[in-house]
Length: 70
Figure 1 (cartoon, one colour):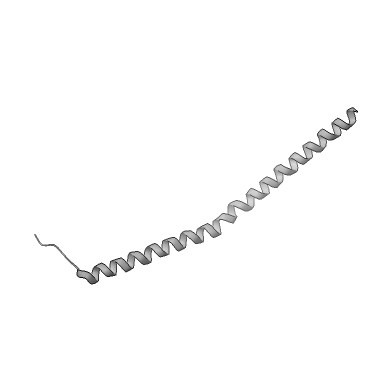
Figure 2 (cartoon, rainbow, N blue to C red):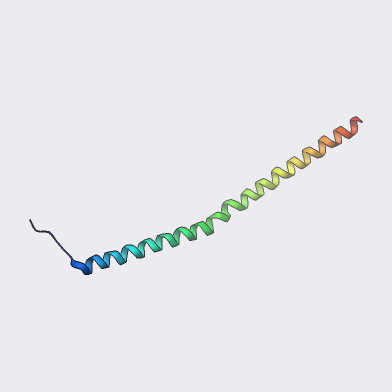
């Protein structure tokens, strides 16, 4: 049976290629984190502000109701 071998230069070449691939993968995942995070955080702050306004409005109505009872 014949085993195909590419020698040490082939092993080094594959090692360099895989290293470059994984560096690019880490770089891409980092960029995705930087660019996608605001896409989720900004609408979340809008939602939190709307909930806070609704709570404040409800508290105002309750305090007005309490004041009118006295």
